[in-house]
Length: 159
Image (cartoon, one colour):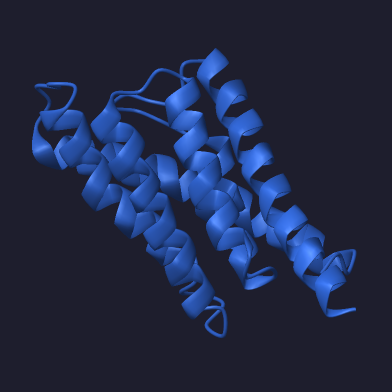
């Protein structure tokens, strides 16, 4: 029974990672997965650690693979994935605070991703502009879409 639980969690984490990759590819098709203005649909999944702790690892791996497979620069692959890992872990730690749990992914990405955009891709945009655009994209994905996903999981008792 204990091995079944471990296998179930491992499988769920892998599925979350795969869904993250798929959603990033969809956003990438519309030019929304990277750049100064990005709305990664996949970041809505950052709410999942509230329900499934194994989602932290799945989100990190999914972001790593999505960045790798969509042709991001090595520094983006590493630090973009770290931003998602920090955000997902923060969400897990704040799961008992329903109004704060959306903040870690927004904050971690708003701090880390603009650094990557500026120094890896050489975007000449002003620092605060990049912070603002990344934060707005994360708010759309994590807060708006993530809260919808959270309500669906609660309503249908999918935990």
